[in-house]
Length: 403
Image (cartoon, rainbow, N blue to C red; front, side, top):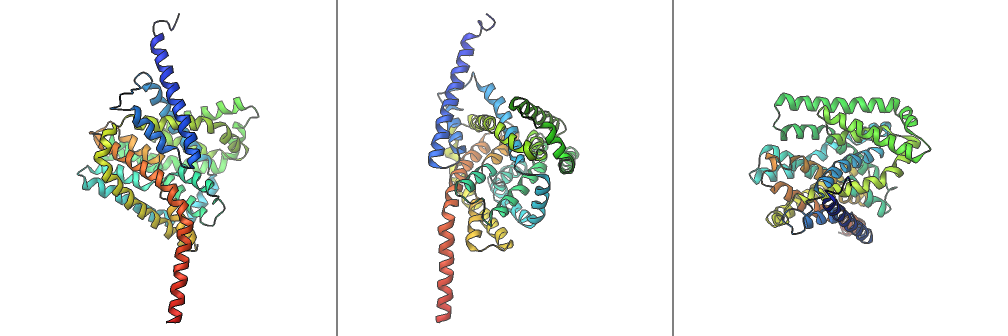
């Protein structure tokens, strides 16, 4: 009898959620068949039932919003699991120069926003969107193409690591700017973010194995709840002190190592996939598909320019590491993909003065759709393109000798 008064509403929520989850399952299966990231399909699903759509999800909107927040935390926790503290610091040292060059990929978005007449804060947001590559899409692409052991792969991963650490500083700064904080408040956010990252990195390197042994348990149930408890507690604490909850979760993932790390990946992966889908769907839910037509030309131009600059970054980074032309091509084209972090950045501005008319969200959605689809396709074309460049170079050498 407790739910009798709201039985119709509960039924509607369950029907809507069932429909969403079933559709997401079909889309994930389709993405697997096509061997592409499911992110573009999740975004299209959200657009199909979001603002301006005759198919609304009003009843379950709150649940999906909460699920999106959980998805962000689990996405970044899982990303942190990929890095051991000592390996992370070593990678940063080896690819520091490439990381500095990579910062230039924020310029296309920054300049594009200013050319559209948007504010400097909005320009910083769009600059962040074009700067950050998608670790999730790229990791899947490397695995699908069997390139995990390639010489250029450590360079690619090194660039991604530095980008993730840049986000640890960028996100709290952005949140402060979007909220209209003073220079002192934003500066405090920067100091807090940098300090938190530094402290956690040092503690993780020193005490991470001990913490991992404490968390590790042969019982899946006990270990799962321990992991989720620590992750959400520290993510919430990070949010309270002005640092993104996602960055707090990322640092927890970095701290987990050894046997606990491998068990965590197996236990958290299904939950991550579930709530990550909710995150992408919820972002697209807030965008009216009719607004995409007005920004599509800008999105195509921005995607083209930022693909070229990111490919050039990967080429330079691989060349700096002494890798040959085919590897440089693979590194450059693999880094083109954008995805989850670009949407995280745009999500911070959603519903604020930085995106008052919704055009920024629409532009980012169109941009990520283009980049998440074209990124893996370009990565697949890297090998034939690399061979063609080598053969052309050899033909020119022969012609020079003959001449």
